[in-house]
Image (cartoon, rainbow, N blue to C red; front, side, top):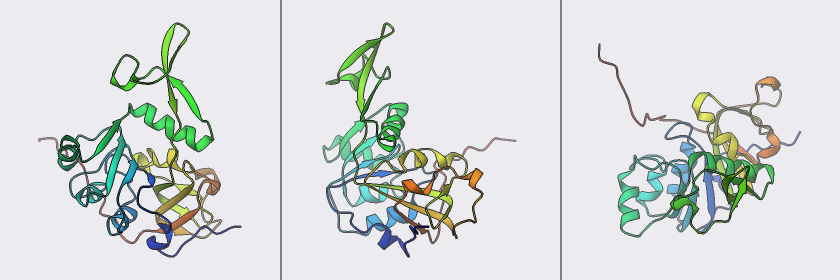
Amino acid sequence: MISKKVENVSQALEGIKSHQTLMLGGFGLCGIPENAIAALAAMHITGLCCISNNAGVDDFGLGLLLQKKQIKKMVSSYVGENALFEEQMLNGELEVELIPQGTLAERCRAAQMGIPAFYTPAGFGTEVAKGKESRIFDGKPHLLEYAFQADFSIIKAWKGDEAGNLIFKGTARNFNALMAGAAKICVAEVEELLPVGALDPNAIHVPGIFIQRIFQGERYEKRIEQRTITKK
């Protein structure tokens, strides 16, 4: 069995350079690769194109990269929690491509599965459709969307083994599973890294064939983006 294990986050991110395209998993602040993002923020790299459903918040998640102006372009679905993101976008410092959430997910999955492009009805007749080819299927217009092309996908799982097999927990599975294997190199950080054979094969969400590097994170803040408390 080939071992995908690397000793630390520095080894896991080896080869990431300025002006590359990175995919980063998670949903809001749930299931984001916290250790990897913090390490990216400490690297002297700029001009990144980041593909992620969210852009973090001002001082956490991808907000750390925005603080240092390491991101040139964000490809996202929802960015409403980040004031710094808004400021940089309005100032023209940050290029932004907003994509319907389902289309974003499918462009990840298409890259994962080796599908170059697909048609979807989402976004037709809106700003999203500008410059895109359209076609009628069953009397309904659809837009042609292309699979993402990324240098690295960086994802986070609950448990993994040294062969790269992964198990996610709850909402943290969103986008992480779809980004596995969707780039030239996929890096997985996990809360618990186990020997091969320790995971129940029936519980595995992503097989190790999609993963090139895996490491165990040191600590997780798991910050809550918005806390709603019911009044008694």
